[in-house]
Image (cartoon, rainbow, N blue to C red):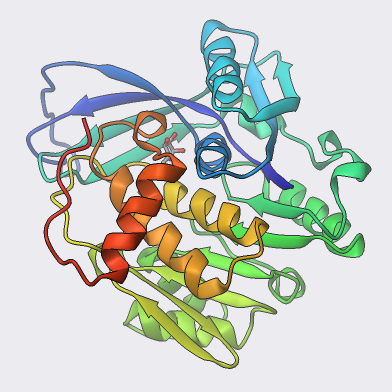
Length: 312
Ligand code: RIB
């Protein structure tokens, strides 16, 4: 069973010609909304990728909170651990440029009230894969991680957005997933000054108890364990919106691990899911289903380097 503890946001998406410089005003022709939040996205991604998933977090008692609860449920995610609290549902403002790149600002709102105690003890055991990100209070993450490890669960920490991690916590993490920026920031915080993300991931592997996975955008992903390094290149795509690609990777990777696939197979599955997520605008709408991921994995295995086209 996969337990995702984390954030749920409503995403307000502004498609703009270019990302603003400090002090610059940029006009968008429209405002689009979509379900988002790294926790909710990863729970939905894992469920669509075939995993049994429970989401634990907080949303407000407002319309957006109801919408997010409905999205999770219709994706097959269990929401017995989701609380409606007296705060506004988390909100992300996403500026999206024509190359599919984004900048994201998040008002935490209800996410700041998520507590580790919302996860019942019986959900944490040797067959649990606990998935954490950094859009809820870090101390709640660390509390839950310690409880989960004491009960024999595996823990995947997606350090998004980047934040320092206590050494005692890092040693307990089974799978640390970071993007290029996060890898460099965490390596710096543990005293390793490196300039290349792959080198940062290697440095982190000396501090992390488990496997370090670095997602490298168009270059794919690498997994670094004490025994060696695995590398999975990404298929060629023309991205429309990279929002949620990291979440698609984490959810699919977790689903593959939950069904006891090898790290290499899980990495390939995650890279395929992340690539597919770049082809549709919005986070939740872009999270791919198991069949689509499996098809792309087969293409990748054949070494088919042709461009993967628009999904809808
Ligand atoms: O990872 C993408 C997500 O980051 C968005 O859905 C947004 O809500 C922010 O949490």
